[in-house]
Image 1: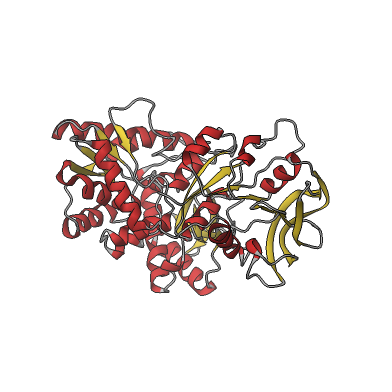
Image 2 (image 1 turned 90 degrees about the vertical axis):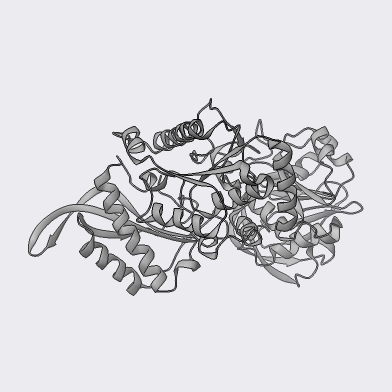
Length: 511
């Protein structure tokens, strides 16, 4: 691939959004840790480099800094937030704690509308998130934009294609941020928009064939879009040497096991084995309340089921999974100095030793990109537009111990949530919407009698990629109808509450 952008990650929680925005320009990009060696960067051979934001202060002891040789690579460079501060600090300018920190919307005044800031007009809105700011620019750098609190909100080198901005162009709160990144990718770096999901499919099929050789592959199929697309990619590469295993772990939504198997048998030419392992999973989860332990137990049990099934139908060298980029980012410190949010059952939750080698063809894709791949591969619309469902299933939507009785309560409530949101025409507008069974009980009055029953939480969020999310402003009448039905129809519930938390600071799932 000729035209590529490299992102060096300094630990920002929105680094992945930068990658997503660049890919929306149909230009391939990857994220590497900020401490990557110059040789690794040379080998990647990017047409441009972006330095991400990060939580550190450049003047702190141990703060991540740039390799000095990076500036000798003669590649266009764009520093974002901390990326601007690290350039300022290391090139002879001065960075210090701001007297007035900037968080949120700021009016950005454009002083130089050429190249990076072309087409933005004299002023626009930018999203700030910084407690430090540049007090003095490095030699040979000039300001190109400012805000009321930041005289150097953007800067450029006077002769070289080096740029930096104090704000975050990657977030949706900077309305013309995509234009800024497009200017960098196309005007400054000279990239061509050649990376598409069709080209991704071709490349992935070649890589799968090369990796698998003449071996067979077992695919973990959940019925969601991620594992379904992964299965179709592997099938396109190796055909009948792929066997899919759908595991009913007892933690699925109401009627899901039957509908998933029926869909794949009727619509897709895949070899699917259905396994009812619900007793096995519920036995392993007995008495477990810690969410991380739940995820790890479920991950280990999945592998155990696949290994057992493989022994019945012959030897398999590889296991294919529908792991996505956000799963990897939230589970491991795979890039820069970012925090581990939680363990996903199919990433950090896998056992240290297992009989398979992993194939994860979607590991570097976001959800919207996976849906595009699914469309190109002919996946039915009903699967493409299913909302994300956690690999550990309802186990992480039941706070506390997972039992059959509590699963039945949650399934009943969750089915009502989905049914009413679809009836109201809201389901596809939401990133995720579901019920949570809380580990508390409350007093109620039903039929003139005192009750002491379970509380169900409702969660509905809007998002572009799951990395950030906002709570959905659902109409009161829809919320009221859902609450009324759950309390009347689901035995054991007498109270329903609505979660109005955004991500961050909360996560989408409760566990």
